[in-house]
Each structure stands twice: as C-alpha cells, then as structure tokens.
Image 1: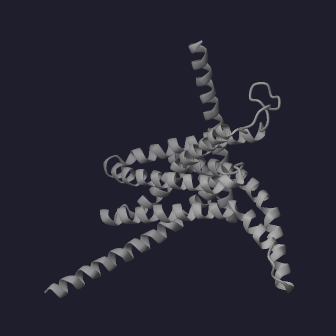
Image 2: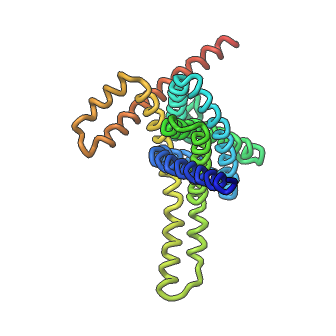
Image 3: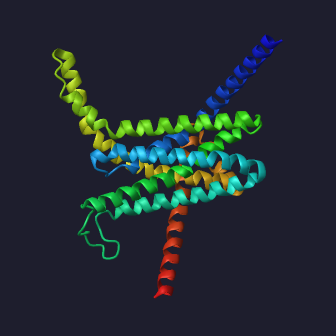
Amino acid sequence: MAGSSLFALLDDIATLLDDISLMSKVAAKKSASVLSDDLAVNAEQVTGMKADRELPVVWAVFKGSLRNKAILVPCALVLNALLPTAVHWLLMIGGAYLCYEGFEAIKDKVTAGRDDDTGQPKKTKPKTPEELAAYEKRKIAGAVRTDFILSAEIIVITLNIVTDAPMLQQILTLALIAVVMTVGVYGLVAGIVRLDDAGLILQKSKATGTWGSVVRAVGGWLLSAAPKLMKALSWIGTVAMFLVGGAFITEGIGPMQHFAERLVEGAGAWETFATLGIHCLVGALVGMVAVLIVKGITTISGKAST
C-alpha cells in the first residue's frame, strides 16, 4: 500500500511538472516579442555608463527585476482572482508611462548637450565621484521602473495562459517564467555590454596561422561594432517603449483595436509590420500628450508655489 501510494505521488508530480513545462513553453513563446523589447530597453539603460560600472549596473537592475517579479506574481494572482478588470487598467496605465518615458528619452537624445532652458551647450557633466554615483543611481532606478512595466506584461501574458490551471500550477509556472526571463534578459544584456572586452581579448590572441588571423579579425570587428551596437540599442530601446506602451493602449481600448485591425486588413505579409507601426504611432502620440500634461502640471504647481 505504501509503495503504491509513493508511485501514485511520483506520477502526480511527474504530471504536474509536465504540465508546468508545457505551459511555460507556450508562455515563453507568447512573451518572445516582449522579451526582445525588454532586452533592447535594458541594454539601452546602460548606454553612457563607464566601462567598469556597466556590469555592476546590470547586476543592480537584475536584482531590481527579481524584486519586481516577486511583487508582481502574487499581486497578479490576487488581482486576477478578486478584481480581474483591474489588471487590464493597470496595464494601460503602465503603457502610458512607458510612452511617457519613451518620449522623454527621444527629447533627451534630440537635445543632448544643450541646456533645457537656454538651448546653449551645457557647461557641466557628471565628473566627480558623487555626481557619477548620483547619475548611476538615477539610471538604475529608471531601468527598474521600466522593467516593472515590461515584467508586468510578461506576467499577465503567462497568467492568461494558465488561468484555467490549478492554483499550484499557476504559481509554479509564473515563478518559472519570471526567473527564466529575468536571467535570460540580463544575461544577454551583460554579454552585449562586454562585447568590446571580448573583442579586445580576441584581437590580442597569440594564435598563429590562418586561425589566428581569423580570430584577431573577429576581435577587431567586435571592437568596432560594439559602440555602434550600443548606440543602435539606445534607439531600439526607445522605440520599443512606444511599441509596448502603444500595444497596451491600442489593445486595451476596444474601438481603437478594431479600427487598427481594419486598417491592416489586406496587408498580407506586411500586416505584422503595419500593426507594429500603428502601435508605435499610438505610443508616440500618447507619450507626447503625457509629457505635455506633466509639463503643464509642473508649470502650474511651480507658479502656485511662488
């Protein structure tokens, strides 16, 4: 009797693990687009950091991302059980915040090196240890806030897949996806920011013959490509904010989603690109409006306090 009970327990565990594995694969596939946006956005966050501070910054944001998911997983389960419509509206608010951050990033890139008020070149940049530490702290805080929104989308996508599963499977699947996605994203980010180091090591290789020449050539290519890749990721990450935020808002408003679907009908192979374009346009417009609203509130509150 004890032996049969043990085998039955092991069979239940095997079935549970198999179900979790299957649902995790589906969730990972559904979250792939968000994962690519998450990667671009977080790689963009370390752009401009000193070389010896890139990995510490990535590590700090990685820990912040784990904390985000530790908060989001139980909150998503509770909200989905008690007030499922709240998840929908919170995601839209998060999408608007991403659009705001994206438009602010565009504005910073366009006005880089110029004073916000006079339009003249800035005279000072973070140079002292205290200024650099404050700058790094702001970058980490901004990256963790952005990660919170992107992590929320991944958690909600996963939750929609496991919503009919038993609670234990929901919890384990969400936890697995949270850990795997976080390790995957920040592992890739760490690899991207250290491409130049890898290139330098390869370029200094002492291998001889044809193989040595190939290795050194690859190293030289990585050294020259790494800064260009980081600059490209800076813009890709900004556009990704518009894409994700615009998708939240477009898909969260029924009439807007139907209108967008009608616009891309008949686009054939270009339908996906057309949809992304609409999401990006919506995100940019929402970001612009959000920035104007925040600026207006700041101006009014500033006048009221004087």
